[in-house]
Figure 1: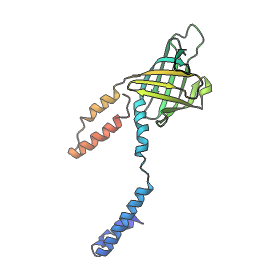
Figure 2: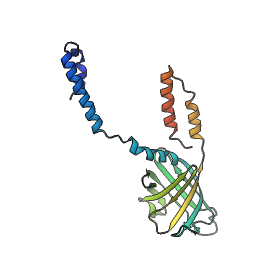
Figure 3: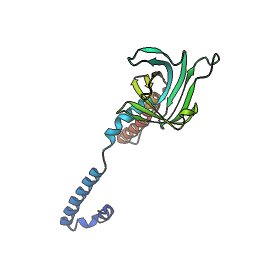
Figure 4: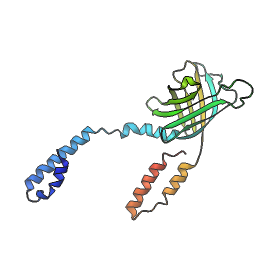
Length: 210
């Protein structure tokens, strides 16, 4: 149905009530078909959006525990680990991890950068690696199972025969809080405009690092 033609012919409706009723019924069917044709994906995307927003920001490496099949700690990947993990609101990520003191032996640190996607149904985040050292990670998808509780994040590779848990703690930036504070100062031409502007501002701020 040509909705544009229906709109342009609106003036003729006054002269023909029967035609108006017919077009009204037809438009109702048209809108119903549109609603059926376009799936409501908001609910399906909501968990992924929530997890993504929770991950956004900078994280500091706390520990690198090696666990056996029973969950008992066998040791640590690094004796004195240090590292940083960053997720951005634009879908980019980068990570580096290694020994704090790199002067006493070979450098076993790793780093890579790329993009990421979240899969909350399996509690996994996929790191799509573009550049890395060592090169073995480059061009691969590094799958990490995540446990996220407040400012604590634990990642491990579910495909590895040895479970190595990298624990991270959030490095607050204050960006989200500062942006939300600015949202309260926004004023529009009227109450409705002010409410709309502040709502849009809060939506944008929710994607900033904590």
